[in-house]
Image 1 (cartoon, helix red, strand yellow):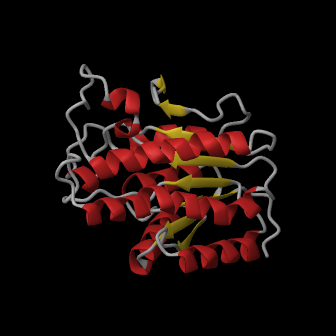
Image 2 (cartoon, one colour):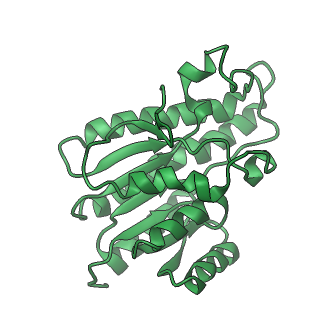
Length: 244
């Protein structure tokens, strides 16, 4: 087991997009970055890309929908580092068969929930023993404006017409996980928040968003590096708190 003083961060779904950029920005803070990805080839390539930028990055095989994979990743992190300082639950998917409640494909909705909600829950449970070993750990759940019930119900919102029963509901569920986990851990030094990155150009939306992954990563990275508990159990965007 390594006996260094550097913090250790695990970012799920970190082989591309926002996740890769979060890993890059955390690595620039002299943090050991564990690049979680289900595809070994892509994960190793992403970690190699980060290392070429001078970042201490290591690939960790992690499929957030596979309990065995999660358990193996947690065991490997414990054996190598003995603790985990930062967990960013970034892995998430959409599905072309998702849609309004009256027509969304149920199989697609279940698949989305498996990754976007059950995945973060399972990963967090597996990593909590190592997060508790850290002096002051941080958990960041990557949510979305589409996960806000207040925004979904606001006819003046630009997101009002985006009706995706699976995606929106999965992110709303992730928000509930954030609130409950923050309360459960209130008497510890672990800080838990949800990040709202904004409408980002990624393959999830056909690169239609106006924000770059570099811009989107700023908020989750800020939450991952919080020096104290001033922000805890909140839903945060670059502009400030987001309505649940």
